[in-house]
Image 1 (tube, helix red, strand yellow):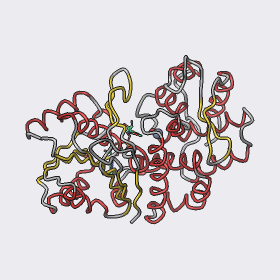
Image 2 (image 1 turned 120 degrees about the horizontal axis):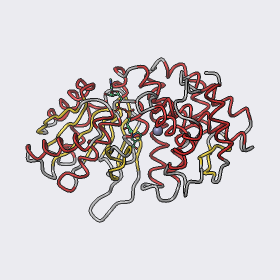
Image 3 (image 1 turned 90 degrees about the horizontal axis):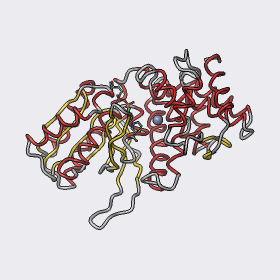
Image 4 (image 1 turned 120 degrees about the vertical axis):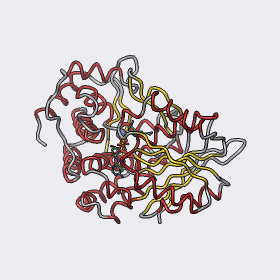
Length: 370
Ligand SMILES: NC(=O)c1ccc[n+]([C@@H]2O[C@H](COP(=O)([O-])OP(=O)(O)OC[C@H]3O[C@@H](n4cnc5c(N)ncnc54)[C@H](O)[C@@H]3O)[C@@H](O)[C@H]2O)c1
Ligand SMILES: [Zn+2]
């Protein structure tokens, strides 16, 4: 079964590097892994939609002699809130959880971010393990240690970096994932090919149909390659300080504006990222950074993955979208900056982009095909 190492500099007390195990049935290994770290107690945090997967994790833990309790939160983004965090802190306190208790996050990015944040903050920090059950979580959110909750004022505004002790990406858990959630995750997979790995991009072109059909072998390779690329970026720029981690935001400045303008939940994140990558590639073409051949290859791959490439309708004006983008954390002083490709497998941060050009690219994607 593939194993990816996330290499991180150690601190005085421990080596912080960890493994990502990928494959069908890897959840069965988690009990033994925690027992090897002398864990004797565990709390499994999951959401209501993944109770069967949480039960499999609990069985592995109890089978390894670990005293395990379970807490479930409602599924959906609304659980990444201070109110739900408060309930979880209270539940841990009621169980007299101490620093030797391991937290296991079983679910998508919502549970991973929330449970990671709870682990980071309760009793000044508990060890956390990630068991991602969505494609987005397996290729992205479970790796890299970003945790957090949302405020009324915006997404992910409160949180911290808190690296897991290990990640178990069980491809078997994806079988119960609704089609739209699954497809949405493929956008992030295509993103890794575009930003870092031309060979992987070409492999995706040859295996899009197998991925859409959730062929297990194709899925294991796609998750393995994506996880390895994310792990590489995280190892090189753990806390987003050198700028390398910013390449992961390819398509995302557009995507966040579409998500905000459409109202959260109308477009799934991956769907917005797909349209955002289409816009970013066209912007790069307009700037003379890539040719139409690359734009066409990306379009074709997104289409083969059954991802949307245009916005059905826009509730906001392009001026509103530009204003949202100017507030994006990638923009400095309101000047637009984008991660743009200069070839397949390579991107750069490009500053001072003409807002008029950005508006044109967006307008074309509202009216465009797809
Ligand atoms: N920490 C990071 O680096 C990072 C990166 C990307 C995204 N995120 C965060 O991740 C969240 C999005 O993650 P997501 O797309 O996984 O959403 P999610 O966690 O809301 O999961 C999507 C839906 O699928 C359900 N679900 C999960 N696994 C399932 C399964 N195996 N079978 C059936 N249903 C299942 C969930 O209950 C939910 O309704 C956002 O909050 C985003 O901010 C974080
Ligand atoms: Zn994303």
